[in-house]
Length: 196
Picture 1 (spheres, rainbow, N blue to C red):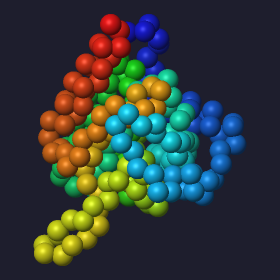
Picture 2 (cartoon, rainbow, N blue to C red):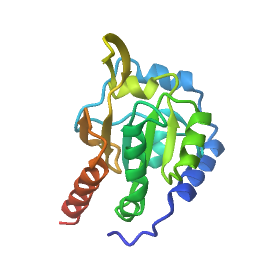
Picture 3 (cartoon, helix red, strand yellow):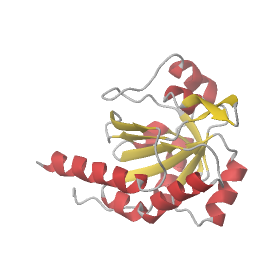
């Protein structure tokens, strides 16, 4: 541990949103152009991106100085997605103690996210990616077979980004149950190695 004061997630997210607004954030078109034709792989730097969250709008680089778990899930209020979001919320304080913030991302609207978070008492922040900018950047939009029909949708995926905003690890095709514990174990191991 670095001895830094651990901040609760909502307080931290609200703080970075105020800071970002004070810096006069650029609009999303700037970020869309910046991220065009890029894909994130292990060891690569994660570019900045404008995000709309249930705690307000900001950009990804406001999370620098913290590790970040960013998990993508298909849809609010579905069984697997609910399990995953509840599990990350249940372990939220454990992640915070490891200097790690958590954000969940789907294509659902902010209104949907807010109702979902309230219904299941989620403590984590949720990002609405209706434009699919983050989804495309992290290459999580895949073909899915729904009752014999091929559709495009989010493949359940998680990305562990370190405090310098380099991608440390990714998980794709994730099974919801037990995944939050798996991610926590990796973050804990990473932090131990940083202290050596």
